Image (cartoon, rainbow, N blue to C red):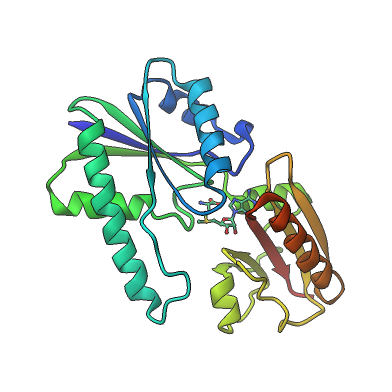
Length: 248
Ligand SMILES: C[S@@+](CC[C@H](N)C(=O)[O-])C[C@H]1O[C@@H](n2cnc3c(N)ncnc32)[C@H](O)[C@@H]1O
């Protein structure tokens, strides 16, 4: 039986790796990576460095091109479904071809595997087809939400109050903000129509040496966040940012 370990690696700081993750990496035979977009080279480089430092035996690094996907589809659900099917097909082939029976493979997942990441969903799909049996374990990682709150030295929630974690797409579509709302996957900040009295805690490249932080009244710092974001994206060729909105 093949074994797969889905390991959360944190969000850009090699020291985000937990001791559990370090142990889980030590004896793997193959590492699988699916990356996409302009950030691909930088994120792959960090994964390769983590492997070089923590895997204690000869191993194979298997990187593959992520299937292409329409970023602004008319039918969002249907497009994501087709994309996941294509990724499952690709990954099943990669695992079969690169991991022998009795060997251990690892997926190094950005942040934590439970948060806006499709690795577990895709492995579930592969398992459901029953054509490639495998055992699976999951090692939690530090999420970008935790990296954001730690960087700003704040709590995620206020006393007894709720937290909503959502996407820029949902916010743009009019999702109501909760007492504390974390927004991820926001390619074009969707906060302009919101109450300017909200407090925003924003962070980009969290955990990495390029980390940028800004916080304050949304109506005051919002335009500056847009400017910093555009500038950083031009400089790096890509950006990953997350923000927390707090009701006044
Ligand atoms: C596909 S999701 C992956 C989330 C990841 N599994 C986690 O636990 O944080 C990618 C989104 O996570 C956020 N993100 C990931 N890494 C980040 C970082 N280093 N700094 C800021 N935001 C980050 C951004 O909102 C980005 O659009």
